[in-house]
Length: 350
Image (cartoon, rainbow, N blue to C red; front, side):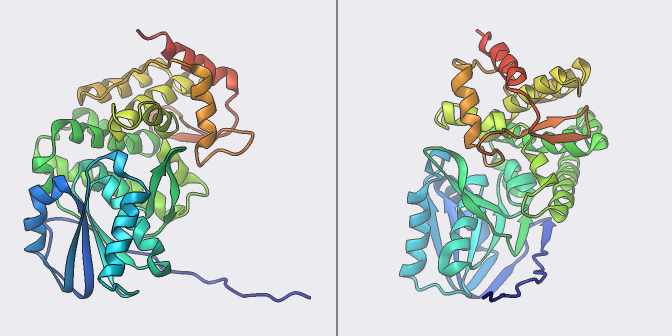
């Protein structure tokens, strides 16, 4: 006997990304702004001048990748229960990628899912992590291994917040901009080679191009069953680097920058990218003071850590390999010997 549950339906998760000064926002429900101590001190007043709600709360987390964990999720959830939030309540993610990912994840699991919006405050979160609905947290096995796809209701990108962003954080965000150009948009890459991002108008155009590139990819593959995985260029290697250094030595974008160089070396060995193209990418990373080298102390251990990557299976590893500049391959056909050769090359760095 078989009982069928017909659940074939199309759910419209569309939303707008507003790239402009933050407008006045009013919500006729309970709202909690989730932020961290750094952003609270710098920009919370600016936000609260523009947000009103039936009942407004602020949840302040500790700042840092090391706090992207279950304890922080519990802090958000428990505050919501204590203030009797319901399924019509709303969370506002107000911070960088760590705050955005955790807020979205908390929203996805609270009473089986409530709405949230993103107001990202770093370049990295504005061009990448706030767009596309990836949410989650880290655990002892790796980065973002626990999470859910949960799209925000809207995203508000205000470049005002970047005025207080430390140069190192800005550079880390640039790595995420560059990954989209390398994998999907050669014209965008060439724009970046000559762009002066200290010019606010040029920076605004850069953000727009990056967001549009990612939005186009997400629209094709919301749940990362195919082409969206290409946006993890640099991340497969980068996540291992972050874990090896306990999330303290490198910012996420810095680890991704090194990972991009490693992926490019792999591409060269597969004859998919030439040395000149790899040098153009490396030069652009170094223009923004991003690291491009890393000493792999144990190639075998580094390789085994790949198997905790979400894109990999029990017996094969999936790599994001650029094909020149502007195209990309998602493949599980890279043999171990090729990867080990790349890792051993980085192991020679002193």
